[in-house]
Image (cartoon, rainbow, N blue to C red; front, side):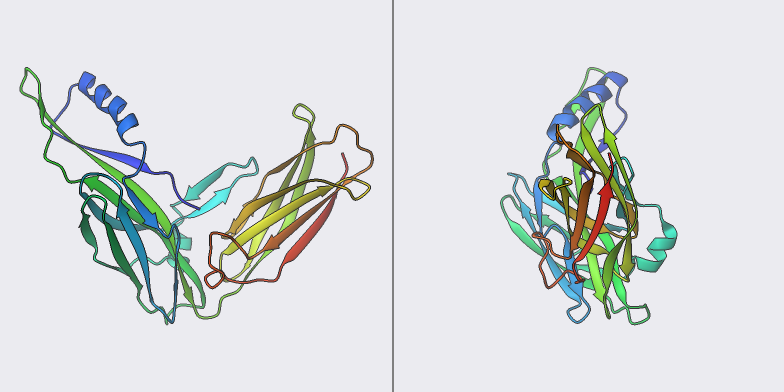
Length: 289
């Protein structure tokens, strides 16, 4: 999963409070979209290969300076369905992180307007580590190369504003033999009468030595076996996680409902050669309103 872009303002010299408010108001508009596109949006590097590539395209009319960094992190979901990134798990970073083992060529680049640049990403051998998938997030920061636009007020205070847009993509490295799977360890169900919805919250645990990346298919049936509703959502389980699903409750229903959760290590956005495979798994639960 991708973290939202952040806008960083570098301000030279000090600004008055009024000027600062104006800068922040402008930045909310100017920094709304990235000027550099990244492909692919997630990078997989295999041990035998050792090297991968990303392609950066400057879609703006000004040259862009590109710099890179790395940050370990992974997504988690709460029982309420809120998704966030964990960046402060130092123990997990030590066990699964790629920091210090990745090299970029070139490591800094200026891309002319409407031009593309290939960046080679090398992961150093990890023969000293157990088999598994290791990962990090590749941070790509871009800023326009333009002449300073100095604004001077009556007091002689000069401002120089440089917008830095930051994007990041997950980087995975497959080392040795890889295995994965998913286990449903708990499932909570309820009926929200105010919205007339059936709420299903399964608790999921990844098995094996690699993150589970695939698709979860959820199908809700009535007491007669007729399909009421189905959903297809991305499945990305790094460790233990929750998923919140809601289904519209039929106006007329008798008896219990049946929920089928099917997990497949297939995703339209990921090549079949990159994804760690697992057998399809189905978990069935009865829901009593």
